[in-house]
Amino acid sequence: MKLHEYQSKQIFARYGIPIPKGKVTAAASEAKEIAKELGGRVVIKAQVLVGGRGKAGGIKVAKDPDEAELFATQILSMEIKGLPVRKVLVDEAASIEQEIYLGITNDRAAKRPVIMASAAGGVEIEEVAKTDPDKIIKLHINPLLGIKDYQTRDIAAGIDLPREYWKQFGDILKALWQVYNDNDATLAEINPLVISKDKRLVALDGKMLIDDNALFRHSDLANVRDTDEDAPSEIEARKYGLTFIKLDGNIGCMVNGAGLAMASMDILKFFGGDPANFLDIGGGAGADKVAAAMRIILSDPNVKAILFNIFGGITRCDEVARGILTAIAEVQPKVPMVVRLVGTNAKEGRAMLANANMITAETLADAAQKAVAAAKGAQA
Image 1 (cartoon, helix red, strand yellow):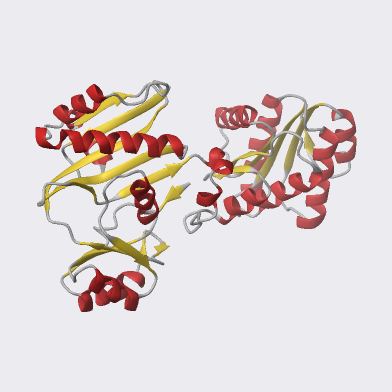
Image 2 (cartoon, rainbow, N blue to C red):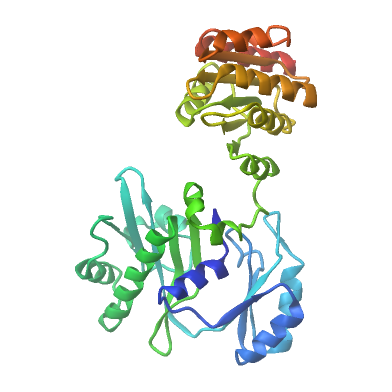
């Protein structure tokens, strides 16, 4: 789950990370009043969950409240990379001496969080990594020990930060680690962290990604989720507790278990197919959940065939079959369907599907090959 800049910075502020004074609004007239409160000169920033706002004209510096209203009107009427701008953040304008990048994310290869810092702040870190990777300092964090003082000094020295800012920098980095850890983030980023003309470090921009699997611990964040960039099928899947990710292929997949779902997608690719989605219906899925999953798969017009790969351990095969039949009656699909049922009540499940004009398979390899052939046949 992505957070908007203003949401991220509000969290930063609760942990003592300095941020500019500012307020978010959905009305241009209110932007004018906020600018008056902040002294006139402000930055108007589009709040959308994509990068490149500045290049698209979504960030403008206003010299007075009237210009703030004008810029807010313009930005609120924009779409940036297909997403509508519904709110703007009005921040006091900062006088900047230097820009720094500072972030914490997961390093899956090292199996621990990693700090990334660079003196080349204010630009996308991916671009810095591509053009000048030596400018990025990386340091892994032992999650049991946290960040130690000597580590903050090492990073400050590594990015050539003037020594008089090392104490402020250390406090901000430790606070950013607490933000990352306490909120189950997969990314907590300040870009840029600036040295202002009044000799302070200030987080001018913020970005956070929260692990979806941890949102049950953060209902306050889950309740403010912005779904503008989410596919409608993914929004629908969350209502039923389904793990669903839309892809660009043409073979819909319904599988129980994340590992089995990944294996099913891999073997489809191996036999020349292209999965249209990742979908894990989970353990113990009842007929209603299976029917919802099938409706979601069939809502994708690119789907030319569906592969059902169900291992009946916790999930009973007859329950899955019942859900499939319910969905067939509701949706009346026009695409071929291949089903592999193995495990608890598999015999009963297969018997229920025998008259439903479905293609059956005994093994995953057999099922994948039949699904690939069916999709190709449907396209012909």
